[in-house]
Amino acid sequence: QLQLVESGGGLVQPGGSLRLSCSTSGFSLQYYAIGWFRQAPGEEREEVSCIRTRDGDTYYTSSVKGRFTISRDSTKNTVYLQMNDLKPEDTGVYFCAAMTKSGYVCYSFPTYDYFGQGTQVTVSS
Image (cartoon, rainbow, N blue to C red; front, side):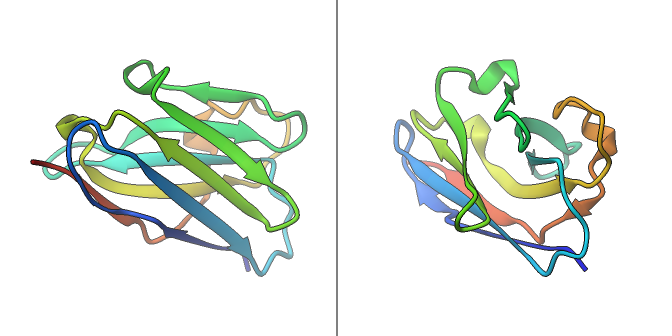
């Protein structure tokens, strides 16, 4: 069973930073990419960023390019999302997810099949 646990969320002022972590464990399945999604109240879930484990290829949605950075520490089985210059519109529950199907680019977001429980990020003054 694949388990993903997010941490690092919180309340931050506009312009501030947070680093989210996604810890993975309990694998009997190999995963090929980790993605970050977010969902604001009353909104659809949105794809934010992803990283492919084979080659480190990354993707960012346009609204976070230049502000967010995704990275992976394979020794700790953890993926990070460094979020800088946060804006109120970044508020939401952030989920990480794993793709256990091979042969896809990491931004094939409908392919993600294991999700964590999420961590709340609130950007407000």
